[in-house]
Picture (cartoon, rainbow, N blue to C red):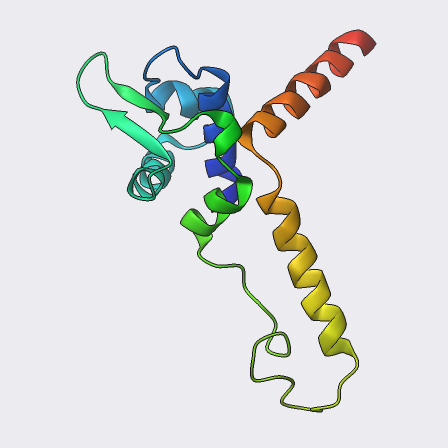
Length: 140
C-alpha cells in the first residue's frame, strides 16, 4: 500500500507540476489516502529527493524533478526498499535443490518486473490516467 499511495500522490503532484506547492490535505482528499499516513509517506519521499516541501500557509509539496524524470521504480524503492527477492533468486541459490530449474525463471521474473517499474515515469502514469479518464467520460 505504501508504494501505491505514494505513487498516486506523486501522480497528483505531476498533474500540478509547475503550479507551485500542493498541500497534503488536498492530496489526501483527492487520492483517498488518510492524511496522517500520507504525511509519513511524503516525509520519506522528501528524504529520497523525489519531492520538495515548503512550510507555511502557502506551503505544500511539489516534485523535485520534472515528471518525465521520476521513475516508478524510484518511488517503490524509496517507500518499500529494494524489491524483495525469493531465496532462490539471491546469490546464494536454492537451499532445497542447488540444481533447481525454477531459479533461473524466478530471476527472469524478478528482472522483468524491475525493468517494467524502472521504465515507467510519472509522465507515463499521468498520460495513462488521462487516457483512462477520457475513456470513462466517453462511455458515460
